[in-house]
Image 1 (cartoon, rainbow, N blue to C red):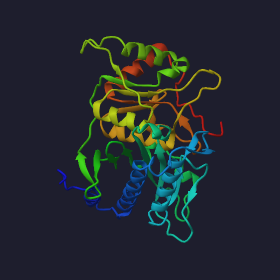
Image 2 (cartoon, one colour):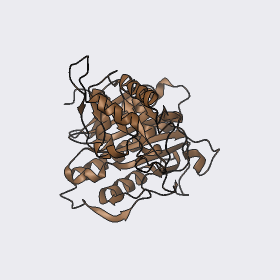
Image 3 (spheres, rainbow, N blue to C red):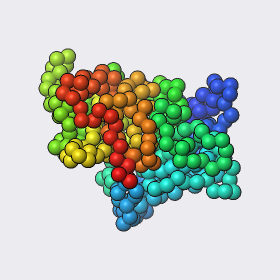
Length: 350
C-alpha cells in the first residue's frame, strides 16, 4: 500500500480547480504524457531482455547517434500526444523540423517540446535516464502551430518537467506554482505523490561538471572549479565531485541535495565556441524547474530563462543549482571576465 494516495492525476486536477479560467486542456496534456512515460519506463526496464539496446546507425540533427530506445521513446510520445486535441504542434530533439499534428485531429492551444530519452548513451550501463518536456501556450491564432510558436524564451513556459527512469520511475514537474515529485507504484500502476513542494538547498556541497572538458573552459570556470576543490571555511571540506553524464540524473541529485551543475561553453577554438545542451529541450525546462524550487540558472552571464531561441536546435551553456553557489560562480565571472558574456548559440545550422 503506497504511503500517499494522491496521484499525479488528482494533483493536476486539483491545481486546475485553483484557476477559474482553466479549461482542462493542460490537465489532459499532462495526463497523456504520464501514460507515455509508463510505456517508456516499461521498455527501458526490459531493454536487455527485449534486445532493444544499441544504436540505429543514424545520427540526429545535432550529430548524436540515435539509439533504438531513443526511437521507441520518440514514437511513443508522438502516438500518445498527437490525437488528444491539446496540441497544435510538437518539436523533439530527435526531429529536425516541426512535428505537425495530423490533419484528422483537432488542433489545441499548446506546444510541446521534448527530449524523448535524455542520457540514452548510458542505457547499456543501467544508469538513470529520462524524458524532459516543456509546454508553451501557442501565440498563433488557430490551425497548425508555427515556428514562432516554438521559438520562445523559457520564461514563457506554462509547464515543464521530467520523467526519471532509475531504481524507480518518477515525474517531477511544475506549472509555475512550485515543484512536485511523484513515484510510479508498480503495484497499482499510478504515479503517487512522494515529494511535495520540492526545494533545493540554498547552498550545497557537491559540484557536477565534466572535467574531461577542462581544456576548453573559460578562465572564470577554471578558477571557480579550483576554488571548489579547496576547503570550505564553513564545513572544513572541499566540495565533492558528482558527475553521471545523464542530465536528468545529475539535475535530480542537484535538485534534492543542492550544489551546482555546470555545462559551460567550450572555448577550445576561441573563434568558434561550442555548447552542448539544447536550449528548448533541456536548458529551458530544467531552468524553470530549478527556479521554481528556489534555485538559480544562468546561461553565460544572463538568466537562462531569458535566452531567446533562434533555431529549433540551438545549444547554450548552463550553470544551475543552489542560489548561493550560482551567485558565487557569477562573482568569479565578474572578477576574471567571461568569454561567455551572453549565451553561445550553436544550433545544428551553425
